[in-house]
Length: 108
Length: 108
DNA sequence: TTTATATATTGCAATATTACGATAATAAAA
DNA sequence: TTTTATTATCGTAATATTGCAATATATAAA
Image (cartoon, rainbow over all chains, first blue to last red; front, side, top):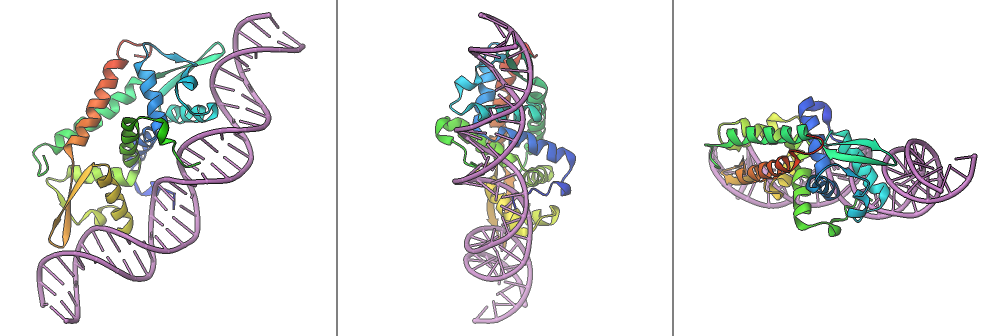
């Protein structure tokens, strides 16, 4: 249906699903990769780096902000974006937990 | 357009986007969580664990298999599924790399 | 205040995703 | 072979996502 039955899952499952959904697009991954490889926060030049129209980039940035992956602060005429380290750590913790549970099982 | 412009991104970005897209659904996260918390590979009872119809679960399993997150082997009348540890490790490595690059920046 | 620059919002068309009923395929058991 | 149990596929309806042009908003400079 294009409609996910969120109600039958836990809040945590829905929260994580939204986080991964935000990561599940090459444009948004490209934005994050670009933000990470820069020395500091990035002001304004994201649109020049990714071959998509400005409204499209703006929409992707909004989605990344909505799940807390990036933060944006106004700086003069432009807006500075950077990664939220806490969310990166959250994903690491999740997968490390999975990794430990996977160890010593049939497929390992 | 509902159509992602994959051609303008790298193969790696598209591959990772597909991986995260597969994780970006609470039903598929629930399947993975269930597979992980079991002692060994799971044969057949996934449909009983998640409140979605059998064809829906089957389709989600197919998508998880397509990105390599799970493996399925035939075992009699049913099929045994388990997590692919290599993909879990791949995500850990990606995020650990991000984490290192994020350190000592403005937002850290 | 007017102008220029940067980002956000709106509206829309094209396509993708989600879910399920019906049904097919597969494999063991009777 | 027929039956039973398990999983996969097909077809379809409802909804979501992606991308962009047009336009609005916001902020600083002139």
